[in-house]
Image 1: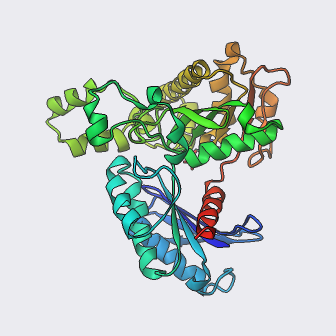
Image 2: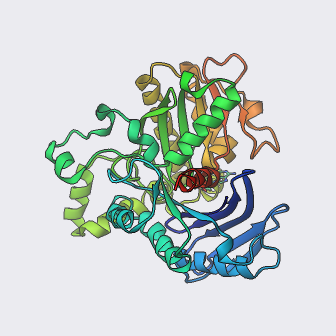
Image 3: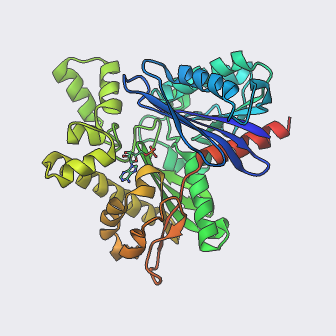
Length: 403
Ligand code: AMP
């Protein structure tokens, strides 16, 4: 089945055309800094994936997707010449709340519920919904699936997903922890099981999705039993622009002191905090590592805090599980930054997670799934390349094939 995968972020768009029968990616697109004056979109096709880059200044995420669809229908190198060749569309949705516990077909009823979930992930869900509204108009007869980041975490027990606030907020407003990045954690756990040569159901894994957003999940016997993101993707680790967990009293204190409203406070916590808030400039880890190397104290502090919070989360999930066989690193920072991996695991050797510094730094290993702990490390450390788009395409195929 030829599936168009749409992974809309707050300021990015990742999209692929995937032929699920052979698990082959035929087209890849990445638009970054969407909304900014220097926003760019790159498109490439199998087999060489030579990138062509287009300016997309001022376009929204959905408008970038519309431009992508125009280009791939006209480009002689594209694997398709018309939208009717797309057999299904798989959309990544960050938050599904209690409305969606698994991948869902998008129809009028589920669309209403998708709109209700927007407030659970205000940076992500609205952009994804705009893309869906647009593709439903352009391809009204093509089946569409919504693949939720929250679905994998539906196995969390109540002791992990409930907040210690009055119970009626759960009953009346469904306030509970939902987690996110589930598609990535599930995929990373399966890839690690393949690397370790053991069935996922026999393993205890701590999966670390460390990208612009970040979350860590305790995967016990293949099931998520706890994860750092909560009601929204704001809880948990320190992230690129998100604060992660802080004392909630800080929020009301700042609102009173600065006289700001809820929307502004939410924006500060989501967009001006985390690495950006501490380092003071970029939220991009590569920039912050460079600033730190040049002696910038605030950049160094941001990295120290980032690493420390990851170490504490890994430690707490070691305690939450009955066994830990491996820690799995994935996403932009987890896959690519040997420096940060070294700093994170320097503090975890006493728990039996012993990094092999040379394996961690093997040149040319980026993009390869591999084990980077020493041979007799009691707990293995794995690096796996996340492939959310492939996973979304396969889930979409499974669902649409059952129609
Ligand atoms: P993602 O959200 O998974 O695309 O990850 C984006 C984050 O990964 C950004 O903060 C990037 O700076 C970071 N990143 C990508 N490559 C590297 C690298 N080689 N070293 C450090 N951080 C990186």
